[in-house]
Every structure is written in structure tokens, then in C-alpha cells.
Length: 263
Image (tube, rainbow, N blue to C red; front, top):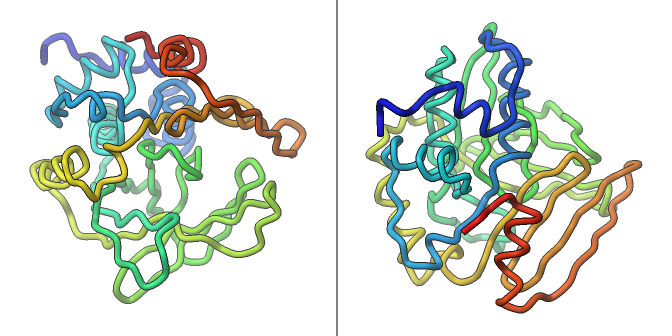
């Protein structure tokens, strides 16, 4: 399998046809193309199929079989792509904080990628189905960046480290909400094996209970949460949500039509 892996085939999978210089524009377009081509999905977890974090296995799943994955798969393979192109990267553990109750310290169950370009550090994260930036975000305290009506910033906490926050003007939200937090402690690939196992099998994991599927589109995103299908459309800077409850027999057609997944 290793001999069959190629940058070109990966780029074709994510519909990227641009420059491959080590620059912010390249990184930004790679992240965007990944989000709009490869879905976040937990189908294998729900089907009790063990997830391998070996790059050839993830490459086969995402590139050859046109599947998606979740953060430990998506960001592992994207990290391989960036390194193969020539980017210098580091991977960190993050505590996913979105929708957590106050005073709760969540387990570190997310992977993020940092890369430096022209002396500036950026977080490139293609492994989340929720409200994360669709372009790399500079790792700079209190710098506010707007993308599709959502503003983002990083703040720092003496215990959690860097915290990514967002504020969604399209939903008339004025308060900043935490997405995830991380410290800059270098992680080896083997370090992600144990939390990957936790996400698959722990009774406390939010990923082994119901379908969690999402893909970004040019005008918003498509999602499945349990048996609820939604289309988010942000055309003309306004948020329109179309949703419906679906039957289990409709799942395969939804996956094929709206997420590019053929089981």
C-alpha cells in the first residue's frame, strides 16, 4: 500500500489544483479544499470497525475509497500531506470544549496541526465537523479573524493553554464560545493511539452513540446528527437551515448525495 500512496492522488481527492509552494496561500487553499471534499464521519466507529492510525490505512480509506474520518484520521493524513509537500509541522493534543459545562475539564481527545510560514505560526485543522475555521488561523492572541460571518480568536489560559473561540453573527451570538484548547507539547504519532481507542470504545465518548457527519460546502455545510439531516446555507451573509428527520433506510442515499460517501 505504501508504494501506491502519492501526493497527486491525494490532491485529486480533495480537488486541489493550485500551487505547491510552502506559503500561506497554499496552506489556506489545501485546508479549504479538504473541508469541502472530505467529510467528517464516524461510520466505522458506529459499525464497530477498529480504526487504524497507520498512514497507509488512512490513505486507503480516505483517498482510495473516498471515505471520510474523524480528527485522529483526518489530521494525521493531512499532516502527512503537508510534510510531503515541504511544510514543517507539529501536532498537539487538544481538549474539545464546545458545549461542555462550565467547570468541566474535558479529556484531550482532539488533534491539531501547527505549521510556521515566514515566521508566523498557523493552526491547520481539518478534523472537526463543528464551527471551526475553514482556513488556517494564525496562532496569535486576541487577533480576530472573520470567516463566513463567524469570527474567531485565540486567547490563552494558564492551565488550558491556547483556547480557540468563536462568535457567530449569523446566529446573533454576541458572546465568545470555546471550541478547544491545547498546549504546545510535541506529540509523537504513537501518542494518539490511546485517545483514539477511548473515542471508539469508552462509554463516555460522544463519538460512538449516534451518527456525526459533516462536510463544508461553498455556501455552508451539510450535517447529520443522529437521524437529523441539515443543510446550512450562508448565501448573502444570512443563515438558512433546512432540516428533516430521516429513516434509517434513507441513510445511504443521503451519504451518497450530500457527503460523497458510497458504502
